[in-house]
View 1 (cartoon, rainbow, N blue to C red):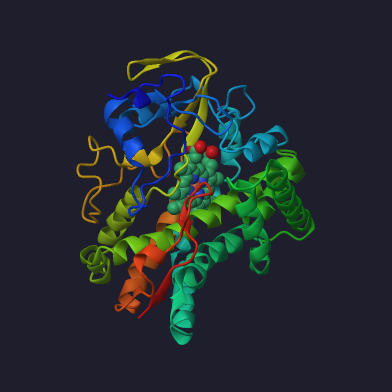
View 2: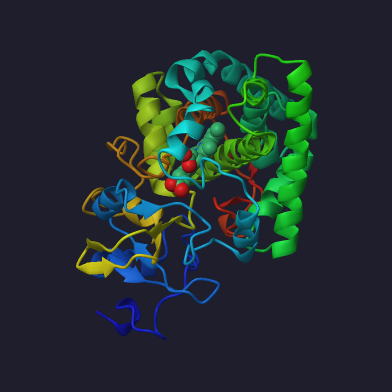
Length: 409
Ligand code: HEM
């Protein structure tokens, strides 16, 4: 084992790590080496601190359900993603993304209904219609088309806007501010301003729903404010979290999945040639595993000393869970570098694990199932309109993505 992997001060790897040129879908080689050789080890993050990096699938499952770890971002030593996130955390009210049980359980119950499997399945026909309409528009337009703007971004944005009761016409405003709020490239001030703009925007929408409610999530939050169950600040911040998470993530999966499939034509053929929903569902799980778009790790802090993987994580130590490492852990997924839509990938951790596991996972699954099972069947000659090495990846957000994906047919 090399010195770099043992956590010796001064030689610990920096995190997040740069992906290897030529295979940007693959987790960095150093992360994969850590999984094999030092699955619980220290890394250095942007502020110079040394949180633990947990890479193995099994260790992540054990720790992410351990009540001795916390997601409270204001505990000293919390391994923030960026300086901007650290600043924003200081002024963020209690939210599902920064509270532990029992507060987390209470807050999550206030927003979970629209995201249950049953509610989301009821949206499938509408999601299909949105997808078909956007593909019609793309096919009627000029070639090449950019799959990010033609399909990737509008499908989840239209769906989450409708579900929440956010006007779709404002998408450029909220998309821009979401990107700035989360980007590693933003200064603390830029992140804070973008975050404040989004909270103000959601607060205004919720205020209107208090007098003119509709059948949507923001009206539900407005009703809870009136009932004294939550404050306006809590409701607006919750709205921001769901809006950001609800459109950025699937928006990145749609073009990335398409690029991965265009590079694996035998796998694309599996989706193109089937009308079996089970085959489509399994394919989506494998794409979620293979791509693991949340590439910067989910973050926690230890409240007590915890022994795991031959190490002792001390109370107050930061912990980062690298989800791509878990999803490429060969103990769990043999030959992880093989994109195999036929494998059983359902136990992947692309949506995290434990109490904070993705609230919108059923919605994301249906969006991806609809898009992937429609696009290649309707456009069987779909192909890249630029050399692969000219396709630009974006790694500055919580989820990595493509800046654009030129396609033709
Ligand atoms: C492919 C799409 C998606 C991926 C890969 C993804 C990934 C994740 C991950 C890894 C977490 C766990 C964070 C942690 O443990 O700290 C998470 C949480 C969350 N996700 Fe998603 N997500 C996706 C889509 C969505 C959608 C469509 C929504 C829409 C509503 C959403 C809303 C949320 C929320 C609100 C949380 C916080 C849950 C909590 O802390 O209790 N996500 N997501």
